[in-house]
Length: 501
Image (cartoon, rainbow, N blue to C red; front, side):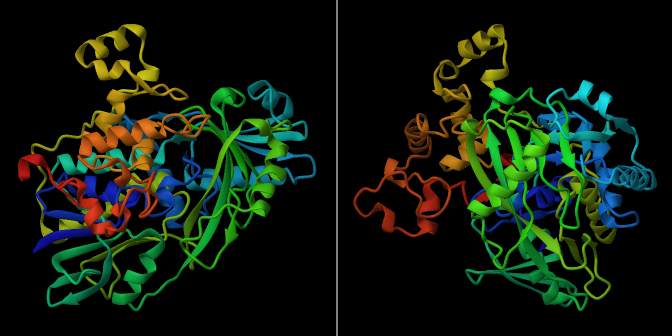
């Protein structure tokens, strides 16, 4: 009998897991994908820590946005997550109704957002000399920031694991049902798990589990957003995250540098029929360019290094579903968490964990360790720090990814650490090997060799990130089932604190 089972290991599920790990509780996280941060929009979003001026006052979106934003300073310091408060600018262009900026300002005041001001064109161009020629005024918000969403998710999960939470990957949930005073979570393989409480952090599929157990039903309506990525040569073009006036479909097309120096353009906001439809389209990418050109007049199209899309879990009622339905005691929703869900994640986790702890009369842990050490980033170290690291481990002196200056030592650690990488994309998310200008054209075979060596598999068994996406095919190796293939490392499917067995 578990105390808590969390469905989903995206940023919301992982944040809740870490918060629960502060208590004396037996917690299990189940995730259908083979890695954390990969099942939904955690790995593909705009990575913005929003200030809170956009959400409608009185909604849970507004409440959790404004509460979560100031929590990032301590959280990212404890977990060594890259985070920058680079400010946000909502820009009105020629032809826009500038009254829209004042409306956002008023909404921000009502939501309790600090450090806001309306600035004129002269001030705007002093702050952002490269802003488009049609820019006329802006709302400047000092508390806006940028973070790496998938690194944040992995850090939360690693810290939760270190504090006693168990993770089971490649584990799909078929159903949830109440049984007496507890819950039964049935897996697709037929196994049934019992638990005192359930947390529904299933992202795009959170409606499925809520609607199984509660009369308070909702739907998740998938909305796809497409992006362009510009090479980090242009990281200094803009300082702030540049928004355009929002529409009823979201915050519009933005231009923002990432914490790693590349520049994001996007996203679109197109309603789709299938929750797994992560295609990029000619029309969607054309729309990104059409609107982004207002912000950045001469976008260097020759320096695009990639495009991608993410699917948002848009709730049918337009607001987050957080908490315990009155007709399903012990079942806790963290559902319909679209933007600004990344910003609200720490506050959502705090409330869910507090409610569960109160229900189960859980005591706090005296030995909870809030710290997590990140993989050393060789590209960011001084020459003295590099020399010291290489002296301890010569693998840090061998560059594997030239574009991002990622070493063999970093890749090896990404595989060996808790919840370690088992495929090319997992290594990429942890180290940036393959995220640079050549998009892994040079380093992919080298990374695959390191994965094979570290996990004890054959090179033909290394995949990019999805079942069947092998780097090369040899003999009948690719005919083995995904389940067998994922047992390359016995520790892959179930992760526990090493001290806990």
